[in-house]
Image (cartoon, rainbow, N blue to C red; front, side):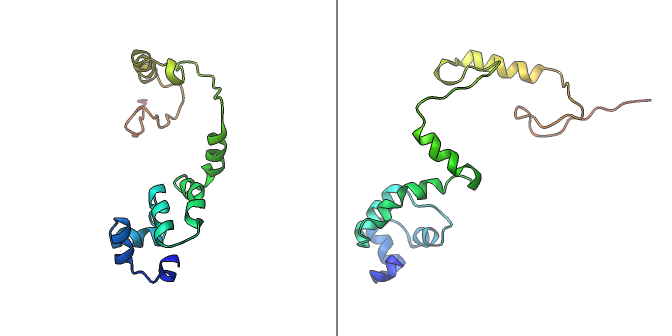
Amino acid sequence: MLRERARLSRIELGERLGYGPDMIASIEQGQRPPQPTFLDDADEVLDAFGLLRAAKDEVAKANFPTFFRNVAGVETRAVEYHAFEIQVVNGLLQTWPGSRAATAAVRAAPAWRWPPTRSPFTSGTRRTRTVRS
């Protein structure tokens, strides 16, 4: 709508911003979220009076799934992170050998649940056990 108000084609707008017409089309159609620099530059070229710059925060949230968008907003304001883990030390305290040892221990542990479930450490295939009678 802003592009049409400025009487620019997708090709002309793309040339002024340094993007191709296909990229402009995918951003306009909502198939691809624009980068913050794109919004800044487009705001100037289209004389949008700061409308596109003001939308940067909302556009950044569009990269997250719908159920996580509120959490992402809280996360940006977070000052501390508290977690309790048995085998993993979160953050900068976790060393490479420690993380390798923890994940190796999880992989080597026997399956205590039946039926077995998917594990983030396996290829995603289900393991089954054959019982002979």
